[in-house]
Length: 252
Ligand code: MLT
Image (cartoon, rainbow, N blue to C red; front, side, top):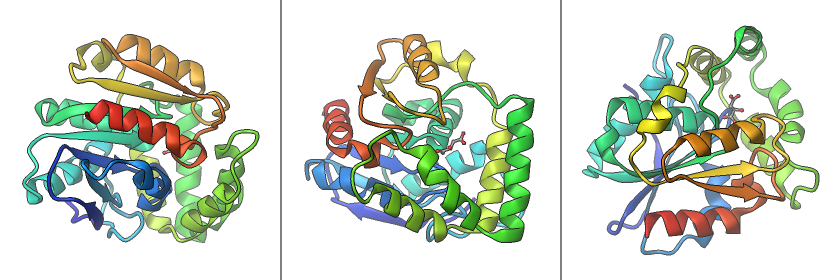
């Protein structure tokens, strides 16, 4: 287990856990947080090895990231909560669905997917892990932001991403890459998801093909698919108003 550094807003009301993706940290939610009503209690952790959270020694799995979140919610005495997970954190939401489905009041899968990596994908993850261990996050800071955004990102989005990725922890990136590579296929879980779910898909996502998000939404009973027409892979940065509006509707 890992003790997670987090930002808390509010002490009562429905609890919404906002979880960043790879190789980012809680700051990516700032624009969404500013638009969410104060009646929603917010918890924004940095995942282990990301932002201000330490990386415990040894390898870890996607389920370990899920266990960290459950431990955090135990500490805060929050038995049931909503969770929005961006990309890798969508994989972690599936881990929570495997580990503790009764604790989830509702979920949002933001630019995420249920399918696991294929063999080429796993090899690329290992190459990323080894490079991050040797060089740190610089190579991702210079390549990933352009890939992550749509055709016309709002001013400041690329700079925010570069700043966040530049400050990432090389070992945390390596651990997350390997955890994602070994994650199970979540497709068989989809028809069993019983909590209200929103799936956000960026029309111009070059990292998670939007068709995969669409198929995932269709397989989850009652899920709402929200198309983010002006977004690539990071709608919380590209269309924060829309994301906040849909999250507020999920939670209310
Ligand atoms: C993320 O945004 O968390 C990652 O791009 C997900 C992935 O690489 O599968």
